[in-house]
Length: 174
Image (tube, rainbow, N blue to C red; front, side, top):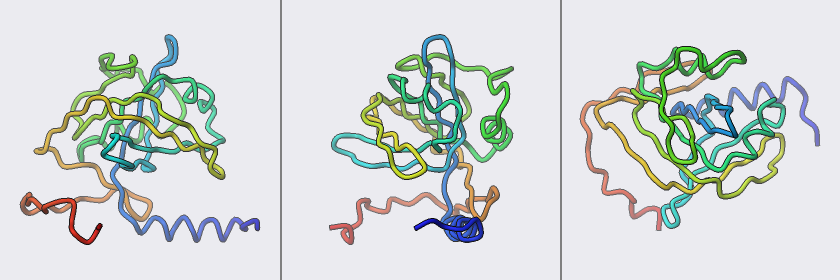
């Protein structure tokens, strides 16, 4: 059953009620560095350590992403809206952006809240997006940096009072 444009927009607005972090995912294919801002990122498994993200099938760079041996997932900090915007649009994303080569040659950026370096695991055809599943091989984080948050079609602030150990995973999950 096909959805009308109005129905698609309504669904997108409904899904936008769920706040997400903002990631910038990078990879290298040959001599080409790729990078894309996305909110479609999630943890999948601790054993084995897997994450997932998705890319719209209309993305011009999709064939290159499918060839990548690995990726770097950057959880952006609250101060990195400009970087998020840069990598969300077409054009020369890398001009003036300092980076180093990480695992699988994926570009690593500084100033982020966290970075996960991953090996490509599986790519699945899922509706209008391709689902990428990757195995985490190395990770680091800076708990003093607040993450960039997105909700209701715009950036939002994460209000934190104190960092508490929640005893994760909570018993309700089992």
